[in-house]
Length: 380
Image 1 (cartoon, rainbow, N blue to C red):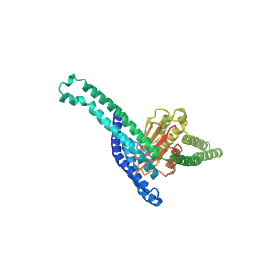
Image 2 (cartoon, rainbow, N blue to C red):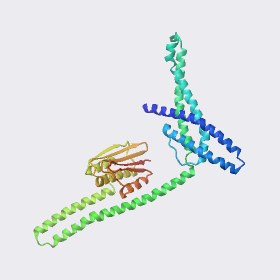
Image 3 (cartoon, rainbow, N blue to C red):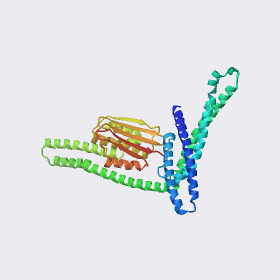
Image 4 (cartoon, rainbow, N blue to C red):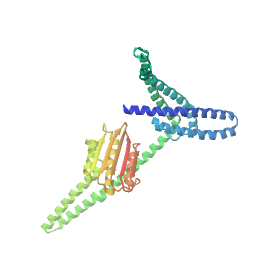
């Protein structure tokens, strides 16, 4: 209820501002139209007049975009042409007038709806008059309709701005093609980087363990001393266990089976348990996200926690995963020394993983900390 009242109040202020702006926009549209009409048959004069007209139109459109963003919560694309701004202003003033009518209706409804409070004090014998009751009820009904009108006009404002100031359909398709091409290339690079990392882990870790194991077994076979042979076999046994542990670690980093068996929450809790510093996990997702989103969210947390433990020397790490609408928000914050490089191989690879899902990754890590790695992953 409080959020609805706050939203209605912000929309009301936005419409009042829009009503005042409509006067300027109407005057500008009329003057610009007359000026362009006067030089319509003169190409050089038309270009000379059109240039300052378009500059003024963009400035007024930017002011209106700020109004929409601050008071109505409408975000529009900053990429639009000056002619689009001129067309937007030519249409927008009508909604400003409509907003003024709605706000005037709200004021009248509020005045009549509360009339009984002061008529009770000022008018004699008001208790026997039913007209005061009818007037108050009518005012409250008008106020109710005006409130609905405020929300409706605010929605119309957003649709008009999105329609006239947004990119054209062809531009949207071209931009989407570029985004898909970029994300496809990022996926290919991420897969190649992952293959190189797996090969490096196997070569530097498991392979070295197996080589050491083979050497120990070879020395044990050649040894003639039973005690030395037993000692070498015990070392070989220990080395085999370490090799198995490293192999499991590599397999876990490639893809955790817990993610398939128990879901994202259990996989994140396993990451917290395996970390060498305390990791607090806050999980607030209503439904289990689809597999691709859950996988990327897991790797964001796993890589961020691993980097923090390895490079930042934190005393604690906080992981928050929550869903908001059709978006999953993931954040990993540590109290380490900071200074993380967003262009490093690990975080850069995460950024490409997230971009492959049309998501976004941000890294804030000032020197001295704290470090915050946040990702937004769209679902569906």
